[in-house]
Length: 165
Image (cartoon, rainbow, N blue to C red; front, side, top):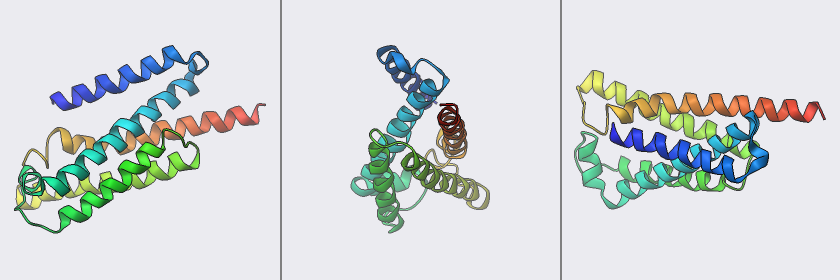
């Protein structure tokens, strides 16, 4: 629970600092853009790079954390997928528009799939290891919906603003 609280505080703290320092973002579109920027940076980039690092360099500990045995080849593959999303999340700092959309869709499918896999593991194999349940499970199931919802609203505002010019 503590990591989720830290994540929420960091996300909103960085968004607020950004909004204070960039005066022309003080409208709904600007607030959403800042929030999305830090969602991509913290939740997609940093979380994915952290996971990549864990799967590749601490594979046995990562497997144990998820309730699996050591030495499974899935760890390397999932680690590389996380590396890809981590790099895409970093590029979201400079790229917007369709790049944000593509990153959000790909990451959401991946993370939601991981969440469904977590639930499946819990139901079929009674795997309630910390890396497979609790706060991590909720993140896997809720974050993609939150990210896509905020991005959809943001894109609507951007598109609507262009039409009114």
